[in-house]
Image 1 (cartoon, rainbow, N blue to C red):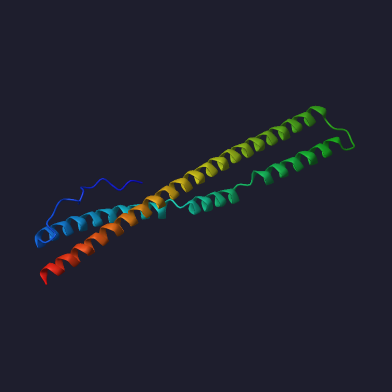
Image 2: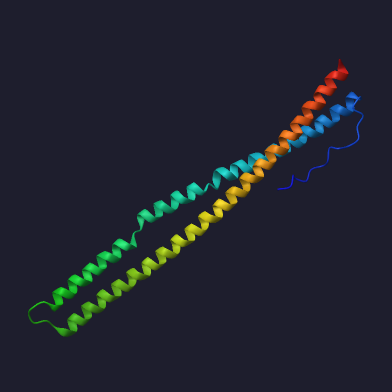
Length: 168
């Protein structure tokens, strides 16, 4: 990340002139405050866009919807129905076909639900990946800002020492 576009401070000043030094210190302090505001914004974004939060939300969602269990349960119901229909005794063939059609529709609906669930989980995984990339990029930007702030603060401290030496 390139440093933010702020006015350059490398203006020619007379380092023996107390007022020039003070002016440069004010400019640098204004830049430091501006960069600290940017850094604070980046840190807030890091707090809000935590990949761990997305992962926890995905896990909570997954725990509330388990189509695999429903599908297994439906399959066992269909098997039970088939065994009941095939069992001994007289049975009405049209009724058996009707019950079989109901069971097959139920299974189809559950398969569709399972497919929709898998698609949603895939979207969650993609979202988690994007959140992680955004998180890493913003963390890098924040680290660059911290380094730039440290440089500017060091320059301010050097100028303050120079100013104190002139005043003495």
